[in-house]
Amino acid sequence: MTTFNEMNLSTDLLRAIEDLNFEKPMPVQAEVIPYLIEKNVSDMIVLAQTGTGKTAAYGLPLLQKIDADNRRTQVLILCPTRELCIQVAEDLTSYSKYIKKVKIAAVFGGASIERQIKVLNSGAQVICATPGRLLDLLRRKETNLSTINAVVLDEADEMLKMGFRDDLESILSETPDDKNTLLFSATMPPEVMQITKNYLKDPKEITIGEKNVGADGVVHHCYMVQAKDRYLALKRIVDFYPEIYGIVFCRTKKETQEVADHLMRDGYNAEPLHGDLSQAQRELVMQKFRSKHVTLLVATDVAARGLDVDDLTHVINYNLPDEAEVYTHRSGRTGRAGKKGISIIIANLREKRKISDIERNLKKQIETKKIFTGKEICEKQLFHMIDKMVQVDVNEDEINPFLELIYKKLEWFEREEIIKKFVSLEFNRFLDYYKDAKDLTINTSFKDRNQNSDINFNRFFINLGNIDKLTPPELIGLINDLTDQKHIAIGKIDIKKTFSFFEADAVYTDTILNSTEDAYFEDRPISIELSSERPQRDNKKRSFHRKNSQSGFNSDKRRNNSKSDRYKDKRY
Image (cartoon, rainbow, N blue to C red; front, side, top):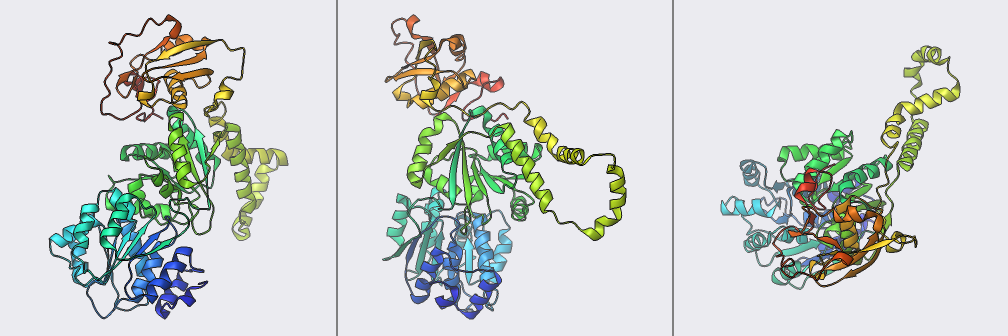
């Protein structure tokens, strides 16, 4: 199928598609729409990444099959978040603008349930809902799903990840057995497989691209920095891309708010999006983001679900997610609709294993790059400003009355001097900020760290080993963070079961030995000693107990001073 006109869609739907400037169907639409229109009842599993046009793929054929004269609910669409729920409802409303009597209702938490009940009572053939709010309405007997012809589980993997399995099963039990069930998911973890076995009958399976593989239009870059330099690295990335329009992903609501606050304080057009915002606040943030009055949206994964923005240039992973599949979701928000995008990771050495997992999942290489220098950023910003000046449209009628006075004020200056002053007017702030900017990039190569054969190495003992899941890159990262140095040459590393040895530049011996005061690794006090001075190991001193806590190096004293906690530090 090459056009929507060849898909047997109704005239009313084709008119709406034309109004929306849809041209050729996207791959998922070309596969799903004809099949659903031709089949009266057929369950379906569709694996496709975020931003591939899934809403139109199921929405157009389901709208075509609706009996507009029947006010009872015929289609139920379940979404993991209110943002996605609202977006789907808005899209379906746009598709059905020329179909008389068809009503779309969106029901989700965080909004007035009384108003939603009123909408449902007025009759809605299509309900878009989040599981929690819909279950609440069912318990109140304010809606009836016995007339449902089709159920869509949109982003099923995310719904199950968010803990909605019991809610989904309760909701599906209220629907007819002969309904059509359509499951759309970016990944197929075991939980989703179980749902398909329990609730789908002989489903048609469609996979767009390879399973769990990132979008073709996205390139992946990684910048290795110390944990304490994460925010500085973010600023450099944003400054290097003057036209950036993207999402910065953080792990927690607290961190999301903090990063957004710091960006706004530093003059960037940024806003946070997380679960602690009211619905009105979230809608206002999204309105500003879609209109590009906000160009950086700092968000948690949950809050970003349902964002439908096609023009994102960048996705920035301020912190990596726990699961590689979540990174695939994040990166899939850029490079949509045939456009190019960049997915960026800001990481430290302890996260190299995660990055390897992500590469295996993506089946793509992530390019490790050096963080931009102040000179590179200033050059990029300068020529961006000049390009804007060259391309600006001059309104002759408006500016002509002022030219005589302008020429008079500038007649004392030579042409070259006018250009220099013009450039400096906007450009000085970058020159001042990056004047003495340090290099933030961590040297990740073992070979490069030990290129100088003249270095005198000392051998050190550290009370961490294989049982602590310590690896050579993690040990180097630990030394970096403990000492606040990133240029210490590291030699041979020998990791044992419960302890390790490593060689380091003897010049930094005192720095290394004095770095572990009040420092802990998963509640285990860190001890580093010169191995030549170390007596036979004292087993009593080694009887540390692992406690259930966040993994990672931490130091209460360093959180109050200059050192940083690799996972918890929020200083910028």
